[in-house]
Image (cartoon, one colour):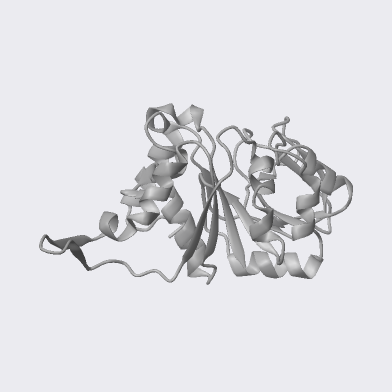
Length: 254
């Protein structure tokens, strides 16, 4: 199963970093937050990634093209240009990097990935959120409910889109950034069927608006409730909090 990571936004509220680098490359403990997200999925056996790039996407491409050199010591034989890496982390991952347009919205980025996602169920998350979610349990929940989309519902503060949930887990309403009345919000970490892509019609479509709102109205959106750790790196304060958790030596998403 492929995992899509939306990694193309401007990250304007984290301008202290994102004027120079794309938001998914902002480091936590010396590693890009994107690296942490991918490692979490890989721990559950999901190692086929599709990255939807946009703003400063070439920096993300260069990171993966030069992954061994960036993350390990190496020797260069100047007689023939050969490089030997020392202590490199060997990862059995497949990473597909797709330019989805610098100005595309979240839904538009996903829509541009149709050719990579048309054949099977896939997962999707944002390139700025960390969580200790059990990915296998999330996938099993999605398959058991047989809907087009499962969204992870979490319990942070009231800065994000609210989910109104029914007793059976069905999402009765998807509303972006309203006044909270239930306390559950969109935490990302989706599982989707290829048919969901039919809700997306262009680059200017915001995933969290028409596509997910319509899926909820059609009864095709269910929630997976997660009561554990979840944090979005939206501001410098969020970044500093995640950095402090990393320095404890046992961050909750590890």
